[in-house]
Image (cartoon, rainbow, N blue to C red; front, side, top):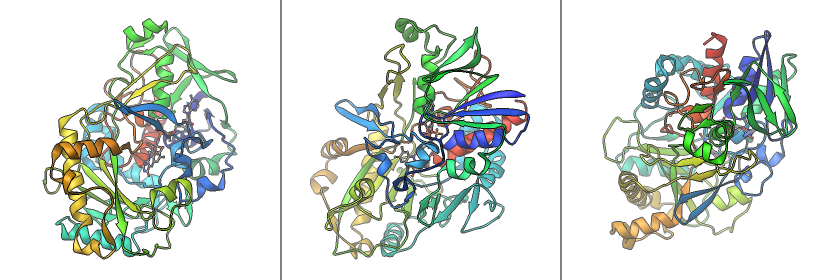
Length: 497
Ligand SMILES: Cc1cc2nc3c(=O)[nH]c(=O)nc-3n(C[C@H](O)[C@H](O)[C@H](O)COP(=O)(O)OP(=O)(O)OC[C@H]3O[C@@H](n4cnc5c(N)ncnc54)[C@H](O)[C@@H]3O)c2cc1C
């Protein structure tokens, strides 16, 4: 019997623990910092809101961070079974072929698009397409698109009027364009990975789910991981797999002496493997552009609040995966986060830079594993990121001002010619509204910190399997990619890699 500890039951960890426990010869213990009894507060299941994203919600880690100098920020992350999929927006879109090319370069052929297509299909039950050569019909995660309602229709018409292509299936293989967003929302419920992957297998004798227990450090015998230290005591294992997310896994690695020699030694942390953990993470900067509705806009009956997205190339190249995203919010962000909003509230579209060149840094501030890490995003440091965001804002303004969208839109709320016609003024406008999509990846990238099977370089018995290992942030939201990582690493472990 191999004893495997999985740390963190989020997007990747829930999938990995469920798949590993398919093997009766493996004893799997999943250790999750948040509650893990499978009972969810109703507000976190209701797909029409995202209250878990608000600092202060008990299911949110709310890590302190800096997006840019003078821009402090609290980064939401889920602290409950299902991890961030329990508190997120429910957008569940596959990575693109170009993303797979980057992953395969770093981690080998098991990460190519063609190798992963069967895995993508195994993850999902696509309610719209059913079982096809591209889609799955029997996987744990429901995938459904909700492109209805007058707002979504006007947005699509406006994007087409601006010359963008239609992209009816964002999990398909067409070039980037405008189309409905695949979601893991079924009816009114945001189906998190705990519900989808773990509840059906919870009673397996070889799977133990330990909730409300936080892992501090890896326990070592030399450079072999032999278990974990938690706030409730020590656990032994033959192998430990970190699925604590891009912040959590990096923090555990660093606290355990897997990280850059100089800074760790300066903090008094004994170094087991000198690796650049946290040195160059990637995330999607985003900016909400507000607009004034013309009268009361009839809401669609669907719970999923992000029905349509446009992806396009900032440089105007056709046929690409797109490096900008414009996500339509069907209800005011204030309402999605806090449950209610002024009836006259403005609405928003959210512009995201999907292929940023800028990189952030996550470092340890103390040898105490309970101390929070320091997180510096360094957004807007790179000229190419600022250029593409400016181009994105200008295209967003043009789209919102089309005749097609003007049926519903009386104008932009706080963006005018003074900003649109002047790069410096637009930079100031963007900097004041800068946000993050909370899609952090690449704190322990493949090809650098881990190999293509998630094994940490320079030590034994330790893997990472979550968005930390992606070499950069994918060009779409990473929730589906995180589940894929759990599935792919589970397959590698089953294969004895
Ligand atoms: C508010 C919000 C909205 C988002 N919206 C979307 C969206 O709509 N679409 C999209 O594609 N992506 C979205 N994302 C991002 C997406 O949800 C994440 O990228 C994805 O869930 C990451 O998966 P993961 O497995 O790497 O980490 P997570 O899902 O965050 O799971 C990590 C798990 O590890 C646990 N953990 C952490 N540290 C420890 C420890 N020391 N000991 C024990 N357990 C620990 C955590 O509690 C958590 O359960 C959103 C994220 C947030 C926070």
